Length: 96
Image (cartoon, rainbow, N blue to C red; front, side, top):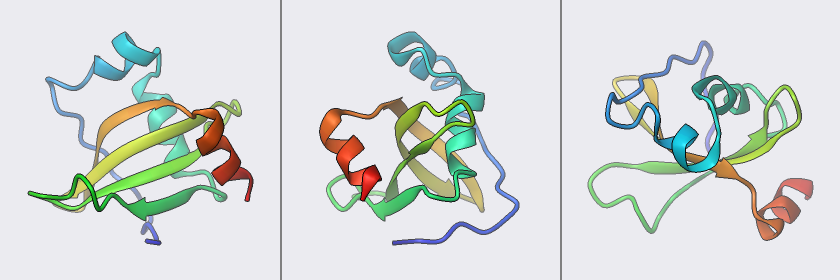
């Protein structure tokens, strides 16, 4: 489990900016909101951390939408790799 420091800054890759909207109808703002959820859960993504450390984040937006986010840290900024709605199995993890 990792802890995020405040304030959180985000960096959005130009090639990745619209990917989450086009695939999952998740805005950048929604993805960023989950980082502020005080009940979110973060863990290291051991399977996909070959070239750089990646992390998994499960949490809620301010509107209560439950999201699963993959991100990395680059120069002390959050870079969201992907964001999507939680699956039923992942939702059970959030409830624990």
